[in-house]
Structure formats: structure tokens, C-alpha cells
Length: 270
Image 1 (cartoon, rainbow, N blue to C red):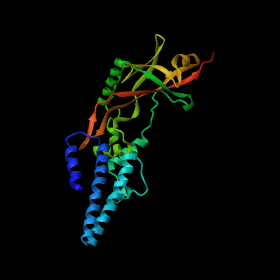
Image 2: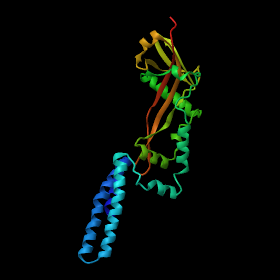
Image 3: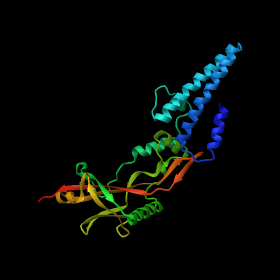
Image 4: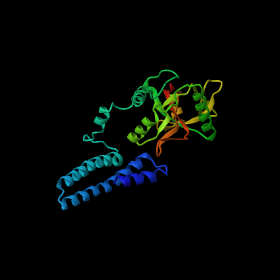
């Protein structure tokens, strides 16, 4: 059985296979190979070696137990109270320090940073921002400038590569360099040619057009403008490059940054 797993590991090493898929392959191969132990046990019983046969049967059921746990974890993304992994991890000292710090940072990191004033949450509403090719380029330029001046931590939530692999195993999703939305240093809403354009940048001098509002909540922008006075409460950036699990370590893939906006609204007096 171990020769079968070693052979699979050898050949899978030649190609870049997603870590979750690789573990699924190992689980299937382990399940098939485990039955060989039962065959060996039967041969020992036939030849009168009952103690050795019983030990192989015991090993078969122990391995089958862990194979079932792997099937639950890698094929259903569920957990079971009979999984001893958390207790074993606790006995060995718990999760790595950087993983704990990364989890703490994610809990403390606010979803939105309202740098354009404080608003009653009842007055806030998500909005849809449409961007063209040039405006997407502007977003990437602003993100690069934010990196250069260390405006925020573009560091994959401070996780090490080992912690990132564990995070991917847990969630099944890649980890982005800017996992939580961070407000642009400067942003504003301007009405130009009857369009509600959103500008952002490092400051008001270097602001760039990053898109235009098309919807407020479920209403299109024209309907919303007729009923409400609209103000830009928050413009945040998130995403960027992602780290995914490779065959032996994490691999960094190139991805674009994205923008989220929230507006504040007030019903028109007339």
C-alpha cells in the first residue's frame, strides 16, 4: 500500500495539482491499498498464524477509520466529533503562532473603514460600480501606489505559506493579498454629464476615475436620483494576487484588485 502511495506521490510531483485534489487521490488510493492488509491477514489465518493475522486485521480497521475521516473532510468539507485531529494538534502545541495571529487580525479587521464621515447605518446602502478597461487600469495603479507607501498590509493577512496551506484546506478557497476591504486614501463622487462618477487616489491632486454608479441597492441609479440625494460613504479596494496550493508549496497567481462602494442617501425634500 505504501509503495502505491509513494508511486502516486512521485508522479503527481511532475504536475501542479491542487492540494485538495491530491489529498482526494491519496484517500482513494489508501482505501484501495488498505484491502491488501485484509488479504495478508487471511493468508496468516489460513497458515495458522492467528496472532499476526489479528494484528493485520486491527491495522486494517485503524487505517479504514482514518480513511473514512479523510473522505468526510476532503469530499464533503464537513467535520465529525470523532475526528481526533484537533486533540492531537493541541497535544503537539496547537496551531502555529502566525496562524493564530492571522485569525486574530481577520477578526479585528473591519469590513469597511468609513473615511468619508460617520453615517447612521440606516442611511447606508451598497451600490454597483461599473468600470471600463481604462478605469480598471487606474484601480491597479492606485493599488500599486498604496503598496509603495505601505498604506495598508498587502501581506495575505500576515499568514506564512504553511498557514496559508492550512487555510486553503479549511476553506477550499485561495488567499488574497488584500483579503479584507481597505478604504482608498481619497475618494469622491462627482456628477459629470449626468453620470455619477467615482474618483479615487492617494490624494485629491492625483485622483483617478475608477467607475460610475449604475445601481443603488436594487434600484437603477436614475430612479434612485429622483427620490434621494446620494453621497459616497465608502470606496474600498480588495483582492489582488492570490496564493493557491501547489504540489510542494503555495503558488502566487496574478489577479486584479476590485472595488466595493457604499452610498449614504437622504430623501429629497421636494
